[in-house]
Length: 542
Image (cartoon, rainbow, N blue to C red; front, side):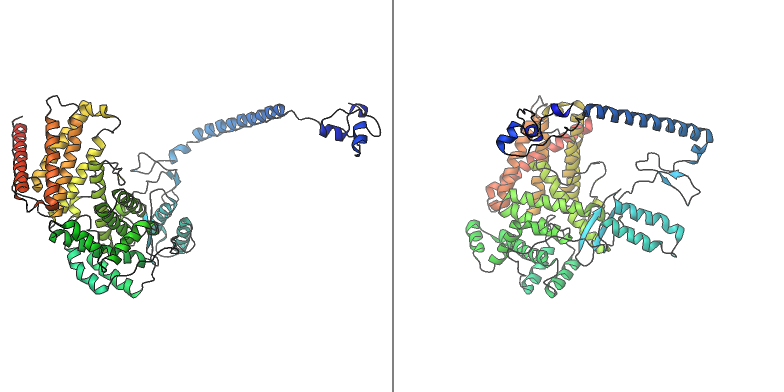
């Protein structure tokens, strides 16, 4: 290129024809702008540049490959590989190898932390569970490993504590919460005298859905909340106290109500003493986001609010609140804290309370998943190992043991039952055999606890609930058997269970004074007992 052949800068930028006259072209003279001539920038061939870059990367990779081959040959020839044994007892390492500086040298694969750790801030009562292979759990594991080496002397304790705090992401090891108390109604504390009066009735209830407190801890919370109403957990406890009173009053009204239960309920809602309690429950249900911080009392409040919503207001809202309670319980590691094997600052009383909370949530979750088809929020990936054992239940409360065993059976059935969108899976012979086996386990459970026996008529709300839960579980299994049952026995059993469920519901609500309904219920229970006896006799003969 020569300067005479180059268009001026102004014409090149405007992309117009330039007559290339010097010192000023016609276009610039017409536009009355300065005309300058300069050499254009050289165009870059990007494809060529990329190709050169790839060639450079390839050459580097070839060089790295050659170095690795050389190092591998040296490593194999030196015999150093014999100094890298796996630590005894660890056959399938899942983590990175670690150098054993205290056991004679060499590398080993550390065993995975089996349980993790629970951290609690004593000032805010916020708890957080750190599962296996998380950084805080690994820091705690490191402290456990080096403690026997250094002993009680030395500054390694301070170093490990600082590492632990950095792992938590807070220099002061504080678990903060983002609760916002502005723009909503505050929940007031109920009269303490009345709360004390109803507690005997509340703790005397034989109901797994409300058995989530330890009495001594509850009384301590009352003293602390009324003494310091502005503490971080005071609002949750205020809601909890109102819900306890409301549940006790509702249970007593349900026990003493007559046929005019609707008018009694409407009159109770207009009672000036009951209205603050109902308002507290409504505030808790509508502003449930205030209970998102991981405190045990928040899980307990959500469990009670969900129960009240499911029974009195909206089942959909109650299910959402219950799901939130389960998610919060999982984030706090209640199922592990309740086992008592975690490294956590929990007293035996606190462990017992967490065991109660998780047991109640687990029973409700499994029963709802089987009988109502709701998602399970506390799944057990290993149904052969029960999430809740009957040995944790008091021997004096047989109904709690019954609920726990039924929940464990329901957990196993959830792994066996086919998905709703794939009914054909239920026809597989292996799956059908497994369902038959667990149906026999259900029948054995009903005989063990006298469920649906003509000699043991249900009398309390808890008795009716466990009867309905058993029938719902058996109908779920019968629904799968119905597609592969040529004789129609499964369909007949499901129809019988459906009729019995409706009759139990009628008798539980208001039919205990109706002799006709009670006689019909006894007759159906007798039919069921004879069928079970015939089935047991056939099984024994086979």
